[in-house]
Length: 97
Image (cartoon, rainbow, N blue to C red; front, top):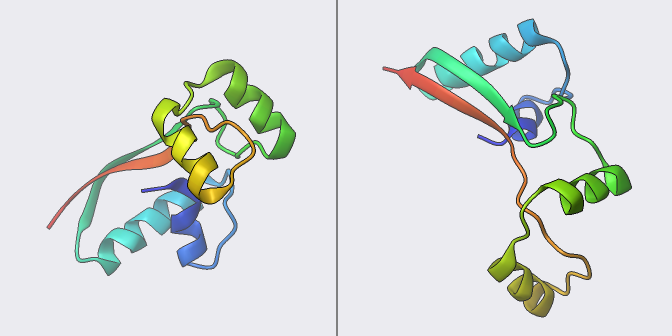
């Protein structure tokens, strides 16, 4: 699950508060009828708070793999002017019924 989207769905700002994060993920699991077993936040930058704008673009171009095939399609069909890189800011969640 993408990091920010869990927070947005509950009308909360993405934050460093780990207690709030755990409670939020537990509530999300309960809302879909599951019990949280374990979760881990994974990020390309090594930071919990996302880097924005030019700082992230520079980091991505220097450190993350380019989207070799998707990049051409994005430029042609979506009019993207910049190169796209693979990035990660997701939760891996293990839950059970």
